[in-house]
Length: 475
Image (tube, rainbow, N blue to C red; front, side, top):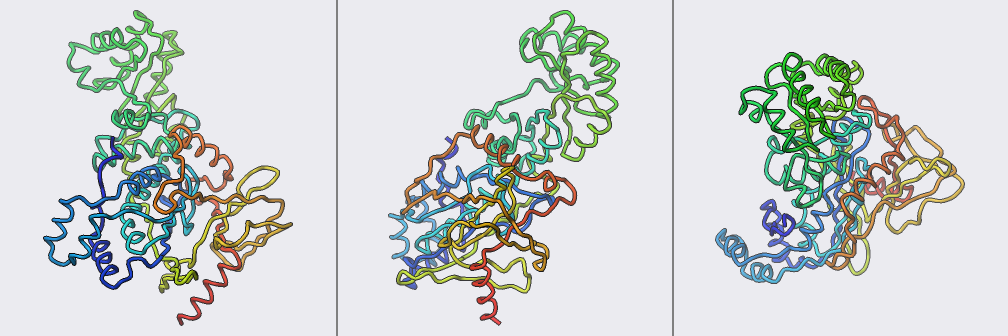
């Protein structure tokens, strides 16, 4: 299974030099809190989608250094023997809290927090960022593309254009969370049960004397999956007529044509007319070829006749903005049972971190169940309650907004306790369903592709005062 590969050494080298340093400085057992969060939503969108947590769980559950790993590190000649001996019996013992996969998330929210011995909590930074950054990026892009299709199925077709084998596999998984109907990636279906979809390539058509013979042979072999690729030569002059002839002769129960090039609107409108005139109103039209949410939106506005889409490179690589940008920062220490908040200060305001051990409360309207605001609060604080609560505009703190008639939900769940997983991983279909349900609780205005309404994310009064006092003290 993919999840069982030992990836302990897939880490930035400085995680190991710091670990050795903590060990040699007698700091390895000091308790630290690290937050993962991101600062900017890809494509200047209104929301992002949390994904990759299942792979984080598998990674943290299988952390171990092999004899080969130890020998490699010894060969670097910078690590102490005491440290290398410690790694032989290394066992992850941290606590972890996280936002469940499929949840809409926003900048600066602590979507994962790791608490434990600093050497351990620091060491897992690289893989947590790698796994969550990648899948959250693809799930977010998939969600945008799915919304553009207005209910028409989206198939993820990007395996051959992905950046690596694991990017293809986990990208297919993430795209399914984001709402795709299935994937061309067979191994993703084998491992995650994301439906594998696909029919033929142009080479199949070219192997026969003509399109009619190619389509007829394929339809006889796959009568329940007879989607025929009609643009190998000429879509309207030969491809569609050959498909019509085969469908009229063999009458397969499920029939469709796929167009992979050309003017999508022109070709689909004319193909639809030809199919309907032949009495094949039930024949579906599938479109592929370098699509994204903007192209899909535009061709549908132009009147293109399309039943489903295959989206490849621009989805699997998130081509328009291929970096999620999540970071992993120290938020607090524990000394003698006392919490000591930590903050990173920068001349770049957005890089100033939120100190302390925190959680996220999402406030919902009692009448509509629509999400109103997220509040980042210290974990010790009770849930927001009362007749009303005042929050600040995230883009202009002098603007205030009063929220009334609300209820609060804590977005985070504990995933590990003392190094043991205490979280039941949901099935992928359940994650996909949950993602769809949670997006329906978000306002349409924040789902626009251009200039979406900014969703409010505020700090609790207590956290705001703590942050302000720490910034003042650092002046």
